[in-house]
Image 1: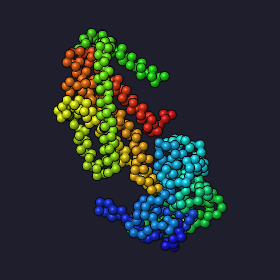
Image 2: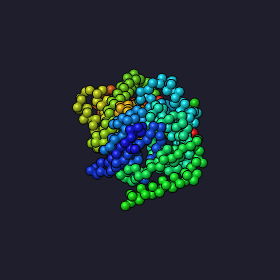
Image 3: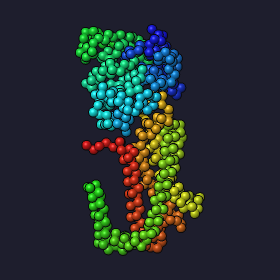
Image 4: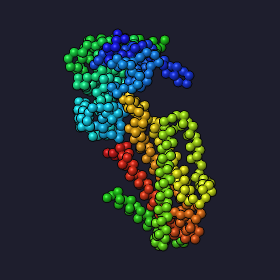
Amino acid sequence: MASSRENLIAIENVTHAYRKDGHTLPVLEDLSLGVVEHGFTAVVGPSGCGKSTLTRLIAGLMRPDAGSVWLHGEQVVSPRSTVGMAFQNPVLLEWRSILKNVLLPLEIVPTSLSKQGAEDRARHLLHLVGLSAFEDKRPSELSGGMRQRASLCRALIHNPDVLILDEPFGALDAFTREDLWLTMHKLRAEEPFTGVLITHDLRESIFLADEVVVLSDRPATVQHRVALKREGSPTLDQLYTGESIATLNELREQIRIARNGAEV
Amino acid sequence: MRQYLVPGFAMVIFLVFWEALVWVNDWPNYKMASPSDLWPAFWRFKELFLSYGWDTLWRTVVGLLIAIVIGVLFGMIMGFSKIMREGLYPLLVGFNAIPKATVVPIVALMFVGQHDLNTVLIAFMISFFPIAVSVSIGLSTLEPEYRDILRSLGASKLTIFWKIALPKTLPEFFGALKVAVTLAFIGTNLMEIVSPHGRGLGALFDSGKTNSDYPLMFAVLIALAVLGIALYYVVVFLEKIFAGWAERSAD
């Protein structure tokens, strides 16, 4: 499965280590992972197991020591403009309005959109996430959840094939987080993308993703996968069905195993 | 309206207090001149005040501009390269630690007679350090995510600098510039006072001293204060334009 180039994102036997002051810290070991087009995979695992390294590899921000990363059947060797990223820190530019922040990627990436077309698209995305009234505000005037919504719009403005989300909701309070989950589903329905979500929140992973991948502790490899069925329009109630709770328990058990592995 | 009335009123109170202090103590001119002595001094030397004031002003501004260019350059070098930061920082700290009053005679000897060059040089030397430090700190503390957002789209280092690093550093830069503009002004006057046969308000101050014209000396002090305030508020004005976003509204 991992070698299947039909997957839009294919990570093949990736091994990576950080070197600093003569020490070697292996973070990923023989990790293989695939995400089909328009699929959405959540990656969970113990803290510090190398999840963020994985996102940087997919984004082409760094290259693995061994193995390869493929997007659309092309090997990733450097950053590519078909990727959108959002982090736990929304990193909005304080000196720009929200609208101008969302438009930032289009100033870098070649686009067929006119200036007006680009603005219309930004306004449309901001409308989708409920920020229409805040287009001209500065980021400092927005709450944490609103900033993260704006950051999602920025990640999507250039129609990326791949959306990489590195714990985007990690710093938000529980209610805001649930709101954002619903927003994610809305965005996905309107703006199809292939996504990888790094998260610590197991409920988040099963609510948002089609597949949840559990990584082992450092050096991380894929320890377990759970495919999720997605039917009808998502509601938060679905998190409390017997099936969801069974999945949740399965994932918790896997995380427990991964963490125990760390202590041995 | 209030923002002009209050400072204006404070200034009037200050002058009245000053006048009263001299009057009550019955101090002679050479101990402390009173505000009412100053106007005649200004009037008598009004041409000199204008032309020397201009000398002081342009020398300070040119020195400061050079300090901005060199300071930003050093700041960029130290902000982007850890090795350069480690290497340059102690040198800069050492250079900054030398009281510039001791450098003044050295520079005056080095470029003897070149008053303009000397003065600009001191103004520059005394004021570039805070600019270099603030820019380097601003650049080196840029969160990696900011860089990643643009780098993941394939942006060049230069683009990242223009779009993110530079604007993000502007508030720190202007904070340093407010310190630097005052320092540059001090530097200019140091040189003008020490350098013989010079021009500028410092030279006028020195001739007041030589001729025991105490009201003139005090009048120069006031002229310097006015110039200093003007320069400072020019920087504040520029800060409002270029880094106004960093100011949070008070409500």
